[in-house]
Length: 227
Image (cartoon, rainbow, N blue to C red; front, side, top):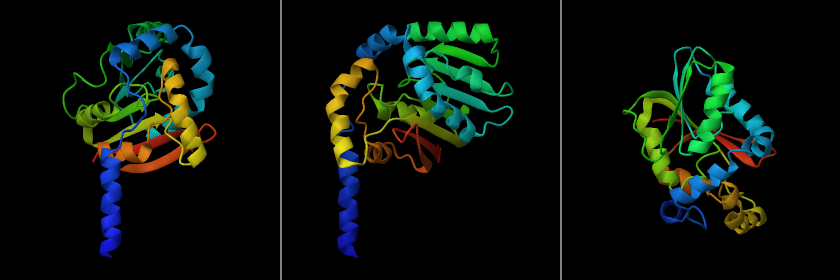
């Protein structure tokens, strides 16, 4: 029994100390990439990633009056999916992406959606402000995913949900290698393809209620209770 406990402790220590990706990026780099992508994002990433967005909104089970924070609103594709009887605050770091989101929200008359320019790693909201904190296609795009998730945890109510929709490194050895090889290339179109899910969960302390594969199994919908 002690042997298995030691092996479990070693695995946990490895997860807690391992690098989550082969590449590191700075905020200025990320902002530059998304400023360039703003005009073409909806064309290239809109239809492909939309099934994941629809499933995430279904699984969130948003209730009337819920306060929802969307971290990384991008061009605002999700905005029209939210029920009108909730209150949505949606933030993004890229002014160019937000400009597209403002146009979409205005055209569709989405008065329940408030857009703000903000760094996801330094949220200006008070502790325990939101019932649901949702990051769609975000945590493998930011410079410090651990800091972003800790901020998400901070602003989420104790009985709230944290929802992540993201690509993580494959558990298949060949695809895992391929994800690592691709990352220095994919980072130039806005994301790291090799973010490690077990290490990410261990280092953030998130305890998933459910993990579902979406979009041909290439992306994961991870739902966690805040506590």
